[in-house]
Length: 313
Image (cartoon, rainbow, N blue to C red):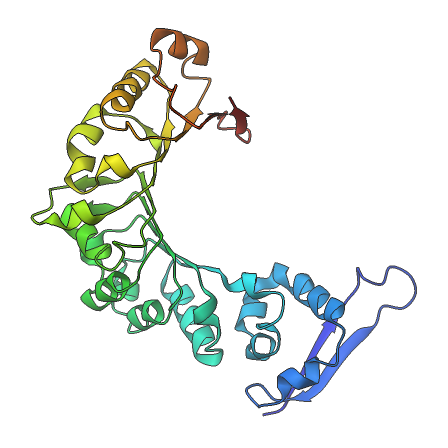
């Protein structure tokens, strides 16, 4: 079937008639499409894509656009994808089928509450995950690892991740061991948000991790996290950057003890403090943190109603 692709561009022509650009008699998937578009000025191509970015579904679902423009200047439009339900999974699978160049551009994948029956029973989840050959970051939101199909678990475990973000995720250390089985040399960052990693490693896999960036910025600190939970799968001696939430005196006391005992090689500390809970000056006066060896300290004042403000000290 032959198609006619057109764009109505208004903002670029504020005066006089507003032209409609017709690119006609082009058939998606046929060799030579890219050469047809190569005659257009690069600035116009960039503007067309920027104009369409507000309608990302139409842009990403268009095989014609992907084949024609992907190798030019707007590859970043395909760096991040999110799967939230069976519909979004089906759309993503269809997009990858029509434009096989796209999966190799994806750098971050978010799986958000995908353990429903329709997603778990879908035959597309594992193939979609496996096709992301350059995936660097995986984010789990409201996920229970054991409810994921075995094929999807195997597909995730085959990737060499640089960053793993676990938000409200139910996972044991055995599950985490499976997830990072191919990431021992590449994994650099870990975020635990509302996630309790339970159990302990039954082998030395955990000792091979070299995580340098640890983020625990969504819950008050507990000393048991550093004395029992984290050491069971994460050598804290390699952590160079730490991001924590510091809402009260208890968390400050915990951080003081952790900096003195477990995180002796820490170089960069980022503290998020909600002023409504406790005055920051009172926290710092009550417990003096051993920060003389740090290269940088960032205090982020979080209002919950306003954007955070970074203060470099």
